[in-house]
Image 1 (cartoon, rainbow, N blue to C red):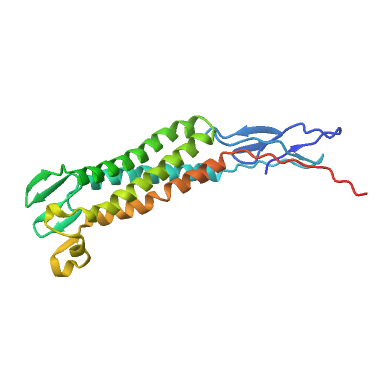
Image 2 (tube, rainbow, N blue to C red):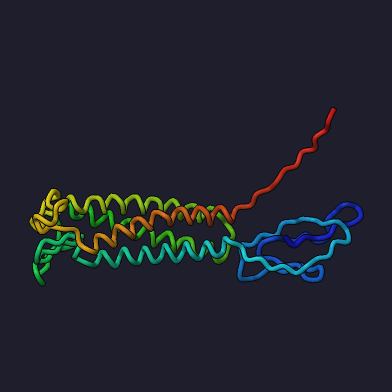
Length: 233
């Protein structure tokens, strides 16, 4: 940790910081690429040499990983939404918005299908919205509260997406299947498609996004230490 020197009267003449800053010849420098690095005062005894130290905070790398992961998951969710191979029964294919027989497709407009489609859309949009919300604060400020709000949005998004995924096997009437037939696909030729498998994987990965967001928010918080003098009687 780069530190300053203490003067003869016990005061710190050059407060320096640990993360994202450096001390070179008694001067303090902060890397402009890491705007969320905080400078906190700390002193060394007189005569202690100052060394040049550059430290990259874990919060910056963690924030990049979180943004990339959230963005990729959100993009993947909209990509699988456009496919119709969620449920497969021979030449029949069912997606969230349409069911197809060979190359002819019709929209699914009954209540349960609209509920599943709306829930999946809301979950995906909430995930993308949380990323858009967090980017300006990550680049231009050091506030933790907006990141916590984004984490809460992503947690809600993962919950809604899970409900939508659990509801998909319960609505298979458009392809002349039942939920019991999906359990035994070898006997009835009704099966969950590859798109549903990818959607489940994306749903599981999306559950880790609010965890990363909470870690990023915690790294951006400032903690102060209070020292109390203790006297022995």
